[in-house]
Length: 580
Image: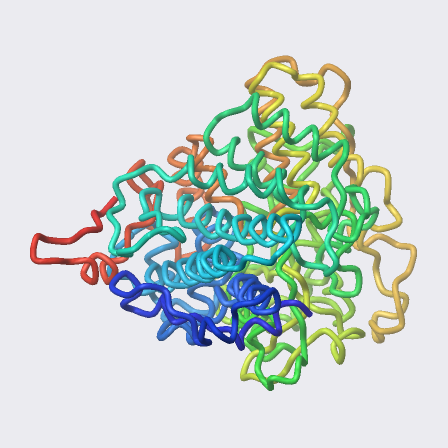
């Protein structure tokens, strides 16, 4: 695997004092001053994608504080997940969940350091590349394109998290830079360069190619509300894009193939962090370490009961019995039945009304098959229902039949080899639908949304099935569905206005991409976070205790600059970094 090599090329610039020191490499320039050396540094820059989930290696912080999946910053803050576990465990997340934000919260500092470590590594690649005289132009463009793609990613994460952040690139001499410049133009320039200079395919899975850069460029336009520019580049990616190994972009028939290590790097994978289990390091550093807390409690996975889906999220998968369409405006009016307060040895009958089949590939719920681990038992696998609710995450959970190959038990909590999809093709289709809706092309927007919904409507063979033998989950699945599933496309002409189109697109992004780290950032850029999240606190607070008293206002759109970084930037004239 590509990233496993990267930890040997470790840059120290993003320790606690990263703003006070220039970026130094652990290896001398003499050792690295050739094509092999610059590629070694480039692999180290890729490794920082995974390093976000390994905060300890950065001089402090826990892996989950900087997880690249953004399960805390995207899903818990966005109302798709509870912190889980019990109320007293990892209390800094409690404050983040209810938007009681404090710059001294150490989670923000760990995330900041992890992202700037990635920036430093990309800058080191570009600096070294500029000293090489004999590198062919085509190879030089490829290396620079990959480095600038990665730098664009790290800065995109910083921008959407913290808004005003310092721009440090390969030309920066004094890294104690103020955060007084909007960095969107620089992020856009990095992805434009990558799009124009990267080849359509690469020799190794996991490296960025032209089309991944195009997708990310379109996303950058979308965040800036440059909708026409976004539409243009998204259509190029949709019509012509291929994966790094040359597969034409498409939607896999089985939705769950996106979350199964046995099916990774398929035609839907635009850019993914390559995870690997049992890599010989005797650690889970390359095995989704940032999610090590996020397995059902008191279960075969051992630890630790965090990251529990909310009832509000589960209710959004309710569909109309007759049409198979979601309830866009009142999905909480007919909630999905849960087992709150019901012990695992007490009778319970799951919900029998119509549901989108994506629910049970996303959420573990009582008496529904939890992959091939048996029926989710409910209460016994939940650490504290009153705080975190009755549900369990599912997209990053490995299968029992694959456990020897795709799980890693080298630590006190498990790791797994399931890639994290930074961008997958369904995400591209929905971003393109949004850009088209915003530019008035409602027919095209409807076609794109229906392409995503059609994957589920056309492939009932891949809806979750019940077990052949309930006593032996490894015996396989029957032809009986695990629940009453029904999902259909929107009818022709359904998008009668831009407002109606956006309502459907925003809803589709939630259910298609649920528990993938996008939700909070979507709500913020749409300008609906205050209304949606305060409604969420009011509804969910009647079910669980953890979000009671939560409140969101416009000043919470971005997370605060870590106080530690402001302190480190201070000179005799005062702090260089200014708080948001």
